[in-house]
Length: 466
Length: 92
Image (spheres, each protein chain N blue to C red):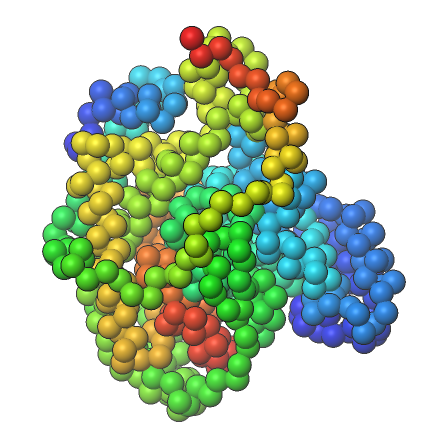
């Protein structure tokens, strides 16, 4: 499939039409989606109508993303369209306004082509928690796509679209990007507005793009980032501006204490990547992130606590699933909320327990303090290095329905990604090599606050070098 | 086990979930495993966190009240509406 930037350039230059670009995407989706289940809904006719509108504009007025078809994770509001969060809890709900990221995509003449499948309410690392079936990995249909933005990553990896948006609360963009062999970034917390994103854990959630390569990712982040008075956390953030960054001037830290006991294939890829970057003049330094190993348990307590509060609003009274046989108000709540799937219920239960007056001191408040300690680790580390290199995931894509995966081992999928959400710093996952089963290995580059340009430059320096 | 069946039932009530005895048993085992794992957080020295607030956290806008332009569309989407009000089951 053509890169996103090439599509936009050609549509702007009149070499191809947006209609042709949309037709190509729709043909690929029609061919592959029945086996992959990456999309929950395709907006085919609407996409073609919008493409025709873009084609009707004078070439000079076509936007930065002209004719690029975008897969939108099903937890972002697109006015007039179903938004289900891959849950039966939101049955019948149609978005009543556009998320800020949707407004920005549309203003740049992108075409939103469909709703991408996901783990229910973004809770999961395999996309097996969707109420509408799992997403299969395009590179091996017996394996998971990763999650929770599994549909978004699979859609890009399969060449159905060249750009997808995902959301990342603990690795939900970077982990599926790694499993599917594509590029995904969790930008700095506050870089991209979350208005119109169904909240999971508000102190950690961030929207970001998934693309086939780094340059497309830069283009997409340039469009969707920036100040939004409707999201207090990105009210004072300047938009991301792509700047050329020489990797030979950068120093990269490797936190050996955090990434010990690596899977051999992933350890080998990491070593090779280090060599590639050294050959390009990057300096390396061993660093320590002594508390990063606590990020995952702290994350599960904090994220579930916030989720129990955020998802309390889903009671079926105002919108979404509504049971018909409830006797009174209490019974209405109980019957309506039965529509949540098992993982969502489990996390709400964990969060409710962790926030309870008898336990908050030991769990929620302690976890929040540990998050502060982890942030300090990163601040100290970034006083001596420009970026930090780690694997994106502890393993490559695992098998669907892997009964050997208990709850905790599934949670460990996010081991290397969660610290970026805790610290609020940006991190990009990019493919680098294959394992013995020919599955993609993802490496991850962490950056300091608002220094996406540096991590993009390092990820770009690794592209195609394995 | 960190969490008892009775605590699970109480938590489910607070979270507005109706659960069976079988689910209560399952949740007790699963949540206990997660909480036992999370107990490692107790070993982290957090005594300095209250004294020195973290810098570099996302800057926030001023907390000012504003009219949400989407409000009419949101209320129009209510499941059960009468005039401009949300109809619910009787509370008492």
